[in-house]
Length: 421
Image 1 (tube, rainbow, N blue to C red):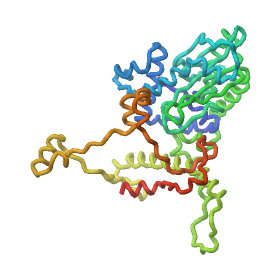
Image 2: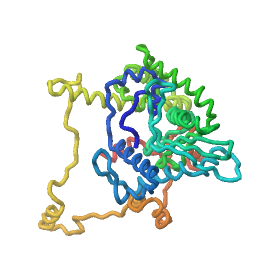
Image 3: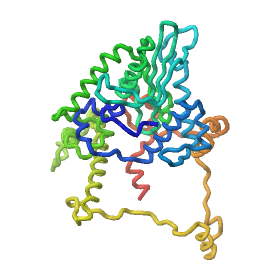
Image 4: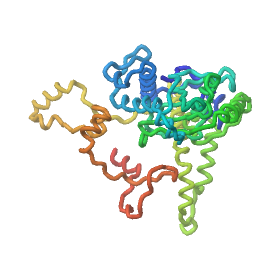
């Protein structure tokens, strides 16, 4: 489980504060907004650390559940599936060998490990610390030792890659700092595990120990110093702003988005049709590069505006020309379903009219029985239709559509809006 206490210059926020040093001061006093997804991630981390620390299977917690903050929490089979891929991989010597691409006569041995280890960063950042999910020291021979640092991410939305990632690099450096006096470490393998995204395979990076501990961490130390400057720079961007607590109230981010929109789109007319022309493919490419950051900013502004509107409501004030109203809702029965069913029978409806039944989807069935049993007994019953075409960046690992696939129809957000209406 991730520590409930986070240092403002800890590894988990390094991608943000290294790129935008002013974000640390901008975020002061703004609490993290909790969510069901965050709680689910915390429970998954707790299952992982308990499994590794107690040498138990994550599936042990499916029946018993687990306690967090004096409350009992269920552990679904699907969560145990995801966690088990992490707990098995971090102790797998084959993963180490494959990452190194190092031919050996025998598999390396895990001779030391740390689970949910709080690591000091004081060598580079005074009083700073971070909590790493798993660290290992592997002996390949009497002269060759390798350290590993692994981070588990339970989320299924945003892919995070290990290569060049400040968070996992800082974990690796801090773990190296802890074990380097006892073991002659030459290489550090840092890895990020996201079993619920894509193929579920971890991403990794192999780093030279001396470069990581000295050269890279000096860069981190300089970035940390910049955050204390009263005139610390605000440097907005998609990666650093996505999880910044201050993004909805940050003038620099607003200006950044404004510049994107005004630079990429033609100001309001009127214009004559012949003057307008058409966007070229490279125009769309440039605009798509910035769609996500505009979406992030717009959502953050809506959330901050809603907070302020509620603060003004007791005073009878509005947020400019916006007002709070009751949103739309769907009708629902107000009695127990058995009472409602009896009433329906009284007016002549049959049970076939009253009750509806639908077979569980493959995803629901897999969640009920677990990934392994599903693959063994039900996988061959599943068909997977072709996915609707979608535009992604060229770095996406999925293969590009063949020209023969041009008959497929794209799906637009407006299609879903029409269905909801």
